[in-house]
Amino acid sequence: MAEDLDKPLLDPENFNRDNIDLEHLPLNEVFEQLRTSAQGLSSEDAEVRLKIFGPNKLEEKTVITVLKFV
Image (cartoon, rainbow, N blue to C red; front, side, top):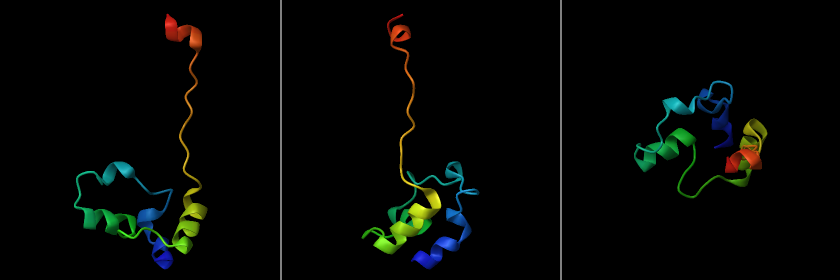
């Protein structure tokens, strides 16, 4: 499966998550779009994707405590 990651769908510069509605696709199509399976990624595939996309992380939002109470 790692060799499939060269295909354009997973190119981080051209990947447009707005064009892929994974929430409403049948499960088998979701696996196809993400190039995975119900068993998940192999360690090799996970390493390749980590190199392409980097680690998962949440954006931190700065909250000014004083304004929160105003």
